Length: 301
Image (cartoon, rainbow, N blue to C red):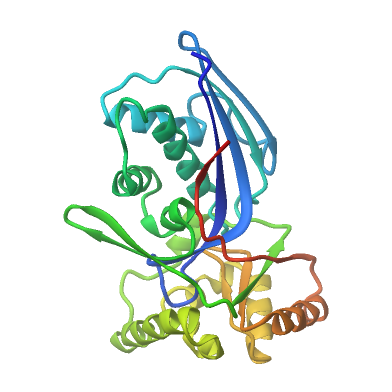
């Protein structure tokens, strides 16, 4: 009783154009969570910031579910908890807010259980994926950087890569939301073979562009698997992506949308993209000039 852990987890952008359900990037926008162990079974949840008015204050809260899931999977009983969450990652914008919640929960549980049941990176990814459903968002939230995530018969796996220092992320966040479930429902069960081959080539090229050759980012972020199918549900997002790409900027839909991520090949190009976006669309978008987060979810002092 009284043990307290503090966790910080970054926002993430999944897919990055062609890397559907595989690639993810951690960004320097963070949710903070503090968890204190209470006597008995009491559960107290305090939330401020993004989405605070809409998230539940009971055991259906996603962070609580992640902590409870971790305790259950290791055969321990979850104690009473006091959660204090400060949310900065916008909800429903394709920036991995649910993945961040799951990642912060399993990281908090890892710290609380450290003296009883050590959990390694593979354990954390498996536990988070069991709740989130896909490892492409939770992997960068947990580990930072650029991650490649895949599934094996033994469970999910990931590889973390360091991004070239010339890559300058720029995020455009709108004042409207998009449901991931709706976005996924717009995709067909099958795609033409040539589209699948196209995305395989672009995904391979994107790894090279992000780690070695940022000048290739525009070609490397081309996609035929998901963005065109979802365009009808996000016309303003599609218009912004098209306007930016027409001027040579590597713009993609962030996750399921509706935010737009630009992977600029330098600070100067990022400023140019921000200026173009301000004049190219008639609806308000918040422009965030971010860095690539390299740490992922961390336990804070």
